[in-house]
Length: 206
Image (tube, rainbow, N blue to C red; front, side):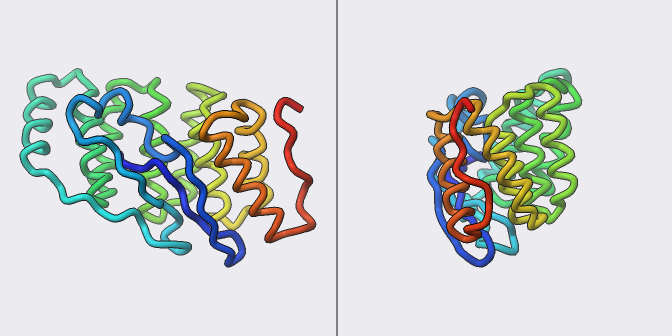
């Protein structure tokens, strides 16, 4: 999927933060050879900000990947590609179908699991998104993209600012210099600006 950025609001205060590979984990590995380079988007809670601008669905690619999926019934790759195409076209229910099919074949893929969780989020299923993110963490407890997305969903899908803060603190501790770490830092700074009584700034590694 095509998202390299997050934009969201906390308590009515909107702020943007740039983070490479924040929501959507597949393009660097499985999409690069078959789809255009990702374009920065601004995903957010459906109630907080507009969804990413849709990319027109490339029916020729859909047909090609569906044919590949039929010819390779045990391969998750074409199913992941279909999930990516449908996600970019804002057809999240279809994305869920194909990401789920890919995970049925390769259940230990934390990236696909997280993409599935994000798709649930965009279909107004915040609880299910969080459940899926927990499955991602069972596969990889240090998956920074998952932890960052947990913070986003808790902030906007559940209005759980304390939970969002805890998730973003984990990202900072795990990977302070990564794009995800920088995004978490900005999220925490904005949260504290909106809510001065919240916890002090995180200290990476503390």
